[in-house]
Each structure stands twice: as structure tokens, then as C-alpha cells.
Length: 123
Image (cartoon, rainbow, N blue to C red; front, side, top):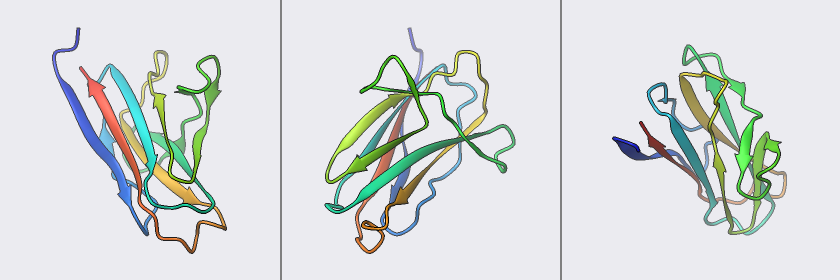
């Protein structure tokens, strides 16, 4: 049973694409909730990046999507006003830092929307 939980906004952008850097080293369970809250055109792709030093990041390709629980996914693509969730539970992986990026498709590039990601953690 978790002793402590947090709900953190890791990405909340309208024009930028990169969220902040968060230390998740003391967290045992992590889930991410992605939202496309305003853009009705094109696709926004969310990617989770991991790092051990907080400066050099690589894309994390072992997310467990709520849509495909039997396979790992590299990112989450959302069209229109939708949302999706993933589990980020690297049982055999250890990364200290996490950040999330949102990449707009060509159709979405000219549209100002709000793209969010919330992280729920427990320790």
C-alpha cells in the first residue's frame, strides 16, 4: 500500500512542446494521463523521455497503454478532443528523471490547442 501519492502536471502547453523535468526516483508506481483539450484538427503525439542525469534524455519505448495492455508503446497519438492513459512502471528499468513532449502534426501546427499530461505517483 502506498504511503504517499502525488498528482503532478508534467505538461501544460499551448505553443511550446516540452514539459518540465521531474525526479521520479523515489516513486514505485507511475501513471500518465494525456489530454488534447482544444485542438480539433490533426494529431498531437505525446512522448515520454527518461534520463539519469536530468540533461540527456532518450525516448522511453516501454509504456503500457490502457488501449493495448499486452504490448509496449513508444508514444500516444491523440486526435481531436480526446485523452488516453498509460502506465509507466519500469520494473527492470531505472531512470531518475522523466519529461513529456507533445509534437503537433502538420495539420495541427497552425492550431493553438492545449496539450496536457498529468502524472499520478505513489511511493
